[in-house]
Amino acid sequence: MLDEKRSIYSWAMYDWANSAFATTVMAGFFPLFFNQYWADPSNPTRSVMYLGWANSLASIVVALIAPFLGAVADRGTAKKKFLLIFAFLGVVMTGGLWFVAQGMWKFAALLYVLATVGFSGGNIFYDSLLPGVASEKKVDFVSSLGFAMGYIGGGLLFAVNVIMFLKPSLFGIPDSATAIKLSFLSVAVWWAVFSIPIFLFVKEPKLVDSVPLHKAFVLGWKQLMDTFKHIRHLRIVGLFLFAYWLYIDGVDTIIRMAVSYGDSLGFESSILITALLITQFVAFFGSLFYSWFSKKIGVKEAIIVAICAYCLITVLGYFMNQSWHFLALAIAIGLFQGGIQALSRSLYTRIIPKKKSAEFFGFYNMLGKFAAVVGPALMGTIGYLSGSQRTGILSILVLFIGGGYFLMKVNIAEGELMAKKYLAD
Image (tube, rainbow, N blue to C red; front, side, top):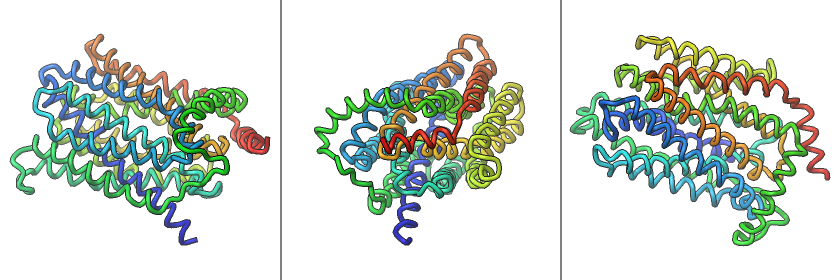
């Protein structure tokens, strides 16, 4: 029992570790700094487009390699090895942002893309360890715990970074620009230090037919081709993945582009950063609440409620024109963001064969990242072509509607039976 608890909390601590990148870098200071320091502050619409393309490029890279690496990790019992490689890439590239001088937006974008690949690629193998950490009864709670730990951990460091940005003199920092660059360094250190428990205390299940890593690459390609066949047979998995591909696009786009969008509308930097900080701490409680909420109405139904909420948030985002509107929407996003992510992951865990978890999570993350290819690029490009970022954000509404429609057609009970039958065959 003690080992099980230690394993669960050590697994969740990785969310605490790498969520600092998601908050301080991806959602917070990088979009702001990119627009105002590295790119052209006199043309925010073009800067938003550049950032959208950078996010899309990172997503394409992860999407292309995710299924193959997942198959390799399953055959070679190498989930933790790949997690280490991607976490190292993310840590080093994030720390490297300290060295990027003003106006060097291409270099900043390159480091950001590589850091995002490290972040997103690592999550493939982090997620794939979940079935070995949590029993079927505990998987919803443990998945929600991971997101909750991520929101509170990332939020704590982000709070310190926000104070550094707003009051640099308190820390002996000469100006706000230096404070932001130091915040990138703090994320790298935070990510590295708090990743240690998952490598020490989470045991990766050993496969009976495990092979050496170099052979796993060869067999991984064959297994990847087989997975396409399996997903066709596991109809419920395929349908869920398509629904997930649509609705998570909108979620990821809002996470990555909200600050940049608010900046393009002329809101003060302090308001944007404060709103993001509020989102983090609201999302901590929202994640735990959604675990309870899903037990009352069902996992799928709880996700559909969150999708409906995101539709409303998107429409309200189109009309917002005052700072308090941005703050109010930040609170609303926090209520549903952790829930939709955590429950999507735990629902997927229920309907896939556990012995192929990394392989199937490779596809899960691939579709999530291909979705993030469409969303940011769509929002940035339509906003640029129309001359209005309001039009850009409204364009993602169709993805929430489509995702909700196809999710309603997913039969969870049938999916669980199909996954168990797959294991028996």
